[in-house]
Image (cartoon, rainbow, N blue to C red; front, top):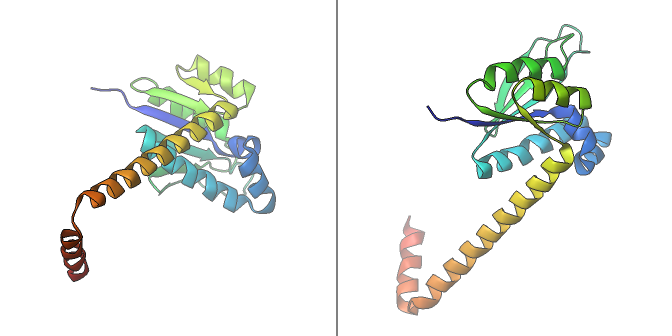
Length: 171
């Protein structure tokens, strides 16, 4: 049985420490959450890992724990009186037995708990750097594919290109 790689994100901690997300969150917290989810969906896809984002709802009266999938990302909202930290602690105890687990947070107490539970931690700064590297690699791949496409069309005669275009339009 092969190990899976998980990245667990302390949602509000990351939003508050990531300058672009913090700026969005100052205007609209829902937009900041959505932006984080979209960014991590792209990151997850490129890295081949599973990302779980945990948001506190512990101060929301009568809040029930809620889990949903958005763009392939598992998004968890904790129940009333449960912090993201306590949910993450419970989660990594279960996951780290059979998987590699990394938790993204700047919370020092949570980082110590993570290390004591068999997972590793990454700071938000390290996550930002890795995310930016991934974005750069994605752009390089896209550029390489564009060049490859241009190169292929340069090798074909105008007659073949015209026939292919007519065939494409029929579909």
